[in-house]
Structure formats: C-alpha cells, structure tokens
Length: 332
Image (cartoon, rainbow, N blue to C red; front, side, top):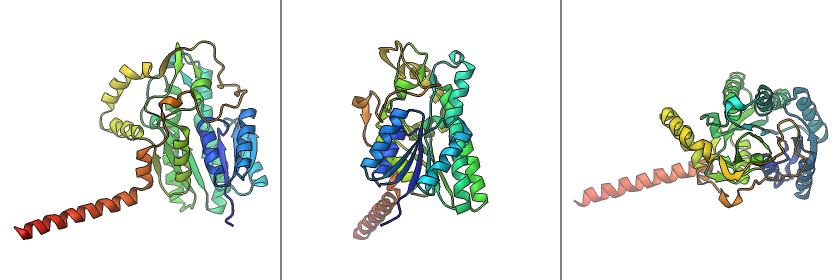
C-alpha cells in the first residue's frame, strides 16, 4: 500500500478550503486542518475520518506567524512529514475603499496575503531540507485584474502573485525540488458572501459566471500533483486575465459600469455577523447560497488537465488535413 500523503489546508473549515479537504480525503490523505472556526474544523475532521483518512484540527489564526509555525510542527509530529501545503485562507471587506477603516484593511491583508506568506514559510522550513514537497497558493483572476468593492482582496492577491513569482525564481536559482504553484480561480459559490464583512446596502454575491467550490478543489488537487506553474480555472478567469493584458482600459470601463451592481443581489443586507476579527460560530460547509447559479464543471479546466492529449489530437487533425489536401492535388 502506498504511503499516505500528509497535507495541510488553511481556511479548512468552510468554502473552497472545505472542498479541498474533501478532495484530499477521497484519497485517504492525512490532513492538517487550520482555521479559526471550531465547529467547522470539527465537522471537517469528521469528514476526513469518515473517508478513511486521519485529521488533525488546529484552531489557528493564519495572520499569526508563530501560530502557523506551531501548527506545522504539530502536523509533522502527529501526522508525518508534510507533502503538500495549501494556502487558502482569506477574508475581505466588500466596500468602496474610502469606507474601509485602516484596521479592517490591515486585517484583510494580514489574513489573505500574510497568511499565505507565513504558511509558505512554515512549509519551506520543512520541505527545503528534504528537497521535496509542494506548496499551492489559492489565487484568483483578481490577482491580475482589480475590481471595485474589492480593493483589500485584490491588493492581497496581487501581492500574493508577486510573492509567488519572486519565490519561484529563488527556488529555481537554488535548484530546489520543492514545487510552488498558484491556482487562479473564478467567482465561486462559497459562504464568504455570508461571513465576510460588507458595507454595501445589498447582500454581496460572486461575479458571474459562478462555479461550485468542488471545481476549485479538483484544480488544487491536480495542481499539487503536476509540475505546472499556474492553473487557470474557468473560462471567465482566462478571458479576465488575457483581456486585461490586451485592453486594461476597456476592462476598467466595463467593470466601473457593471461590477458594483453585479456584486450585489437584490436582497437588502440587514444585520449580519462577519468573521473579519472573530471566527464564525457555526459549521458553514463548502457551499454558499448560490447553488442554482453555480456550474459544477469547467471545460476550461478539463482542457488544461488534458492539454497534451488535445495537442496530440490537433497534430493528428492537421496531418490528416495535409494528407487529404495532398491527395486532392494528386487527383487533379
């Protein structure tokens, strides 16, 4: 029997992180679960164990470097050497920039950006001496293209991408066997639109088209086991990134006109508890409230995973066309 992987997932209690935990649990991995929500962590731990894996629930604020380092040590002591570390934890504030208080903005960056930095540091401290292991940064199309109401999150993801590029250069310079990859995600149906802080009059929602968190989880698991620099998930991620490179001025005008209203439902916000400073006090699971709008598959991700097969099919089709053309010329 093959030795089980040991995996750490931050933000493991809900949303994409919870879906990632389930994806690794299907393979009976040992999973270290890092998040702040006790109820969500307990539920995630049960799911791993029911799937036949081992789980260690570690209440951790990823903005605290020492807490992340201590959690990594616990995982290795109790589950074994870490093979894969997934930096997924995030939080944000849905608001116009000038409505976000300095402590709110700082907190969103500390969790979303520095949480990924501290997780990467904790993983590298263990992986570099062994010269093996994979670190996955869960990114976003918004690492390339900022949108309104998301200055804190977009700023964090842009910073994360710059950190990713710098660190990959350093690992390559050292000839390291540690693999660093980043998965760029589209809008997803997760509970973040219920538990992230919002100062908008209507309930926030993901930018369409929306995908289920399991789509992201499959991409993260695949990225962790294939030597790919970046993985784009969803056609919308591709055209956001490519479109912004080709015509950023056009993307800016379009988003200015559509994205403020497009990120809000028609439902008044009312009173809501958020997790910016305090953890959620219930098990939220992986899905948000937008199941009826969310796609369960991404053809673009399928194409990414099978690009060699598609390239081969393209070569064969081109060869067949050339043969057909040549035969037609001979007959003439």
